[in-house]
Structure formats: structure tokens, C-alpha cells
Image (tube, rainbow over all chains, first blue to last red):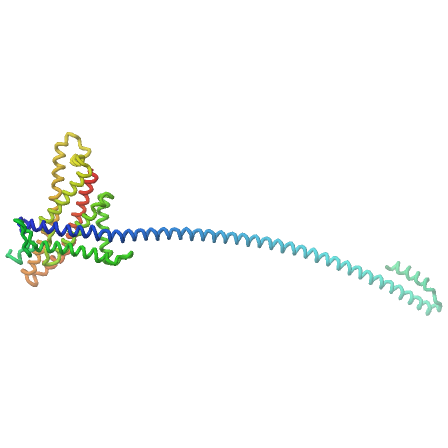
Length: 163
Length: 245
């Protein structure tokens, strides 16, 4: 078995020492600082990104909250406005209705007054016509002209009875 | 088995490439040394070139380098905790060295320097001595309380303390032999079955060929697993030295 050939041990140990020392120095001085630098940099970058993401999330939450608040505020305001307007409209309606009914009442009153006036005038006219007619009739029938006052009295008497 | 190419142990032979002699000691540059330096070169190339244009979002090569770094870093953090950070360069070098030694050994006609007991045992002894030194430096004489198992009555101490000391001293042996034995056995078995493919001919060789393919997959797994085991046991030993019980 070549492994148990003790004559080869010194050279193996010597070259093991040499090569392992070289490797150790290279790894210790060059490789490890390089790799650990890169990994540290990455770690800090990842941490920074995470922190930024958290901040942004908090900000987004805040914006969302304020947006929701504005929305509810707007909604309640709109509701209030709607209510107010409805009240106003109702009030105006009532006002207008009362005004209108007042006007109608006034108008009907005027109309009644006018009708009364016309009726009275018509009555007076009727009286005059009746007097004239009575005078004319009596003149024709009895060939005598009765005085206007007499006829008027009779007509008034008759009209009092009829009406 | 015949000599030379068909000998399944021939792959472990150490061949001198450049003879070097210091005094009585032969420290020739061998195929083993060449593959050790090749492993060091491959690891350095992999880890340095993949991190050359390092970006925040890693590419494939950078990802692999970072993955191996984090793999060992997590191993150390989980077993030892934050006090283990000091030893990370050593543990990381150890893991990469064994892993690349094992993996390069899986390439046909290459040499597996981790299949030599001299190399694995030397690494295990280095870990053992280093860990013992850390324990002594950190706890002073109190370190020897490590050999007294907690919650055991004084009556049993004469029995338990020798057992603990033996188990502590056998750590480098088991650590070194485990890696050496796994790789030697695996590579030998691969070679034996590969020899069957040749000797059984075209028809009869299909079965051993399929077996060799499956075995190669298993050996790649073992190559990784043994590097992992060596590293995690080193982490455990460091943890014991720092925290005692």
C-alpha cells in the first residue's frame, strides 16, 4: 500500500504545509474580505429597502385614511345639504301655496264685488226700464201719463214683493 | 492482480517529479504536491474570479462562491456561535482544501492527495493541537475539567477520566483515518470494477460498467460528505475547546 510508505511522508507533509499556508493566506487576506463586503452591502441594501417599503406603506395608509375621512365628510355634507334643500323647498312650497290661496281668495272677493255691482246696476236698469215700460203701458192703456214717482213707487213695491 | 496499470493501488503511488533534498530529508516535488498546488490554484481562481466583478445581485459563479462561504459560515455559527468567527478563515480553507482535493481526485488519471494517511492525519493533528491550544489559552488549567464528565459521582471518576482522556486523544486518529479510509476504499473499489469492465469484454463488461457509473455518483457524494464531516467535526472540537461542556 503506497500510503504506508513512510519514505514519502516528509515530502507530503512539507508540500501540505506549503500549499495549505498559501491557501490560508489567500482566503484570509483576499477571499473572505471580498465576499463578506459584498454580503454586508447586500444586507444593508435589503434592510434599507425594507425600511423604505415600510415607510411608504405607512404613508399610503395615512393617505388612505385621509381619503376615507374626506369621503365620509363629503358624504355627510352632501346629506346635510340635501336635507336643508328639501326643507327650503318644502317651506317655499307652503309659502307659495298660502300666497296663492290668498290671491285666489282676493280674486274671488273682487269678482263677487264686481258681480254684486253689476247686479245692482242691472237691478237699477231693470227699475228704470220697468218704470218706463209701466209709464208707456199706462199711457197706452189709460191714456194718461202717470207721474214717474208714482210708477217708481209701484215698481219698487212690486219688486220688493218679488225679490 | 497484475503489476502497473491494473493494480488498483497503483493510483495511490507517489511519483517524484522534481527531486529536492534538504539534508537527509527528501522533500521532492511529487504528483501529490502538484495536485495540492493545483487544488490551491483552483480554489483561489474559483473564489477570486467569481467575485471579481461582484454585484449586488450575484451571477452564477458569484452565487456559488457565496454559497460555499455561507455554507461554512453557517456551519461554524450553528456549532460554535459568534466566538467561532476568528477561526472562520481556517475552517473555510480546510473545507475548500479537502473538498477540492476530493473532487479533483474524482477526475480519471488524477491523484487524490486526501487519500493519503500522512496528509489526512497531519490535518487532523493540526486541528487537534490547535483546538487543545485554544482550550488551554482560553481556560488555563480549568481546561482539564473537560475530562471530568458533569453529573458523574466522584466514585466513578477514576474510571471516567481515563475514558474521557482516551476518547479525546483518539479524536485526531478517527478524524484522519475516516477521510483517508473513505477515499482509499472508494477509489480502490472504482478501480477494481473498472478493471472488470476491461477483463470481461464488451458483453460481460456492461454490468460492471453500470456499477462503475453508479459508484462514481456515490463517490462524488462521499467526496463532498467527507469534506463536510471533517469540517463539522473541526467545528465541534472548536466548540468544545471554547465552551468546554
